[in-house]
Amino acid sequence: MKTGSMLYEGKAKKMYATDDPAVLLVDYKNSLTAFNAQKKAEMEGKGRLNNLISSRLFEYLNKKGIPTHFIERIDETRQLVKKVNIIPVEVVTRNITTGTLCRRLGVEEGMILPSPLVEYYLKSDELGDPLILEDHAILFNWSTREELDKIREITLKVNQLLKEYFEKLDVILVDFKLEFGKDPEGNLLLSDEISPDTCRFWDRSSGEKLDKDRFRKDLGNVLGAYQEIWSRITSKGE
Image 1 (cartoon, rainbow, N blue to C red):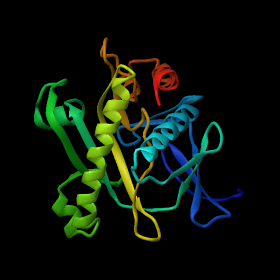
Image 2: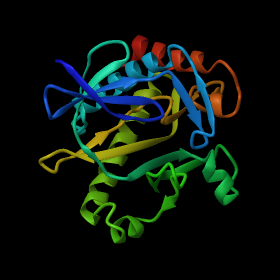
Image 3: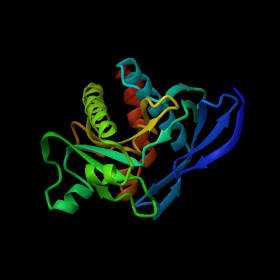
Image 4: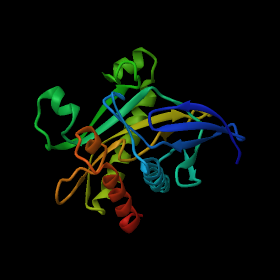
């Protein structure tokens, strides 16, 4: 498949047209960003690991019946995906309290929630991805009630599947962000990526952080944490 012009460059990925108008090529970058890109760095090998991890997790979810945009990984840093129109609502699912939830509500870190907490954020770098209500999304035409209901249903299924997947790897899925898009036929597809950039992973025994929090909090060995997730996936994952 031939690669065409670059259509979009984000903080972590570049997207290119292909000779199939329904298919895009995603190229993962080595860039690391945090706090709405106020903190930035380059880390050789990070794009490769995120591409490998995200590809494997999308393959797993596809097999489990989750509709996604993922088609196939074509090399170390690139994958092919279905072209979608992204819904500008990011979905964050929390199983354990940490991060902005603790700062916003004054709750202690590490509380295991009795059921998953699903939050919605407006996808807007300019506004810092603010927390929104479902009513905001509906009233401002960012999404519909039907789409939000389906998004929540899929999100909770993904949460259960990924929790079970990572439990086998002795990793706790603390929280994660998902994005969704619609294909030309109007089908809702899980999109973007699933990686240590978009998930919080804690080692079950030590509580060690194995995700982008190592960059956010200056904990060091960021690439080693990403590599550890990939190593566990390849050694024990499906």
